[in-house]
Length: 337
Ligand code: NAD
Ligand code: DAU
Image 1 (tube, rainbow, N blue to C red):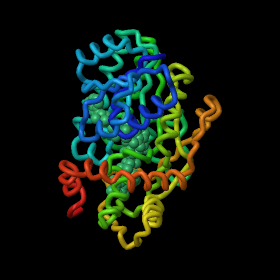
Image 2: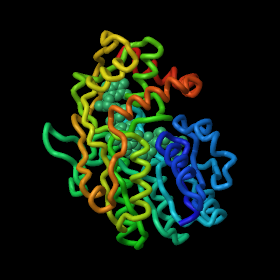
Image 3: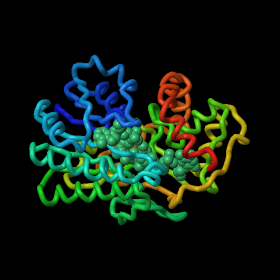
Image 4: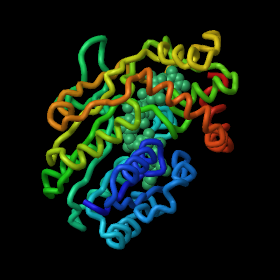
């Protein structure tokens, strides 16, 4: 497939995905369709602008006519939907936009995909749709959906619509459910870049609750190769879990960052927990590894060093995204927490 609509391509994972595709293919054209919310940043894609295989369209996935026009104008054959409101904490304070973008926006994409005979639709979903684990076990593709936050409820709802469009309209769909990503270009509302940014500013690191919640960390570039593999070789109608096999407690994670940046553990501050905080995520990777021959290429130790180095080398990017609205967000979320 040559002409692919990548929605949300100005966000963290989308940026990494577009760069990977432009660097590793020579016949794929990418139409990046993004509303440029607080999380979207075209500065991250400056090196792509001159590439004739890259086009940017400023648009909302809820916009029916612009979406239809974009699909027609660019002879779109495939859609990869990254566009979403993606931060759990924001979904607790302001859930409406999560339903609008993640549910209604996805539905609009599916309707247009059917209308214009799109050959394949990939929904980028999350392991959070499965809910939370105890000390043992892993999420498989057969685990029941039990979303706990407004964010994960909206993503699970979108997953159901994708499934329904495959079943009812015979749209060729695949869905990926990935664990926590980290790496270059991640907005510093998420744990790892937030902590790196705070360490660089000599500020405390806010750890929710007891800090013993577990996340399964995956380097973003490995997520991107997995998505491309599923897009090209996944079986229609199926779901593929993607995980890094790197379970860490949040406390282990912040201590690692402090060690790499040579700062004292006294910067760790325990703050009020996130309401409904999921305790543990862990992905069973067996299906994607055995059926599509994908595996993570970067260890956690390599990935976290690369990530810290990227933020140190790109302080201008960090300064640019943490000015303005970010300051207001940070003080509302953390001051007096
Ligand atoms: P992000 O918040 O960094 O980027 C989201 C992008 O979507 C931004 O560029 C934003 O401008 C765009 N967008 C938001 N609303 C839009 C709308 N209505 N129309 C068009 N564009 C819109 O998110 P991310 O971390 O890059 O996540 C990308 C996808 O991957 C999301 O669907 C998320 O649920 C999923 N995911 C993320 C992770 C993770 O750890 N970050 C893990 C698993 C799955
Ligand atoms: O599992 C995949 C999901 O991972 C994605 O679907 C989401 O889009 C992505 O945001 C991420 O969700 P989390 O809620 O796990 O990520 P976050 O970076 O917000 O938090 C990681 C862990 O760190 C979580 O247990 C909450 C904790 N945390 C987070 C922040 C921002 C803190 O202790 N302090 C903080 O300030």
